[in-house]
Image (tube, rainbow, N blue to C red; front, side, top):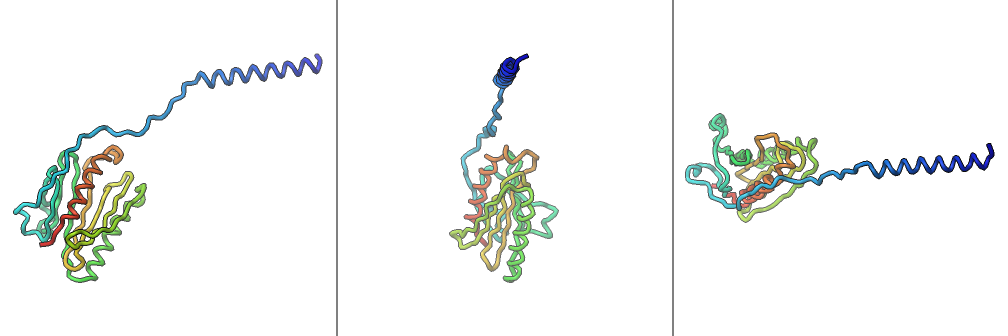
Length: 203
């Protein structure tokens, strides 16, 4: 067997193996992952109503969505008479409002610190957070935290006049659906929460 024969045999074998390799590569189905999408949810236009006379004894007032209902937790009514829930029955969502009177600046600072600590508890599972401080036309200061990812609450806020009143709000969903699926509803209710913040007045 000559060296020339061995050389050509090696070349032919290599070409044959390359042909088989590319044939299998081209004949293997190639699947592209489907882009992330959301089930279309038809959400109504934003419409708001002011708290009715039934809540006139509360030290605060605001406008809330017509798609929501307002109620109190009976078990907390004696200990915390001015706590309130804004419930969205169609979306299994609830905004929990907790109110505290402010007897002193040090007490207000403690409330604010507690609020930030409660927000920080969600950092572990959060993909990110957008903090925002705003001032409303009624002279209130508000801090808003929009939290992304598979977290229990996608938005929290507190609002205060800096001297007498402190109101904290937290958005929850009752079901275990992933927040990616809930994204349109979350954005819808976030807009309602911003409207609530901007229309809050103390009584």
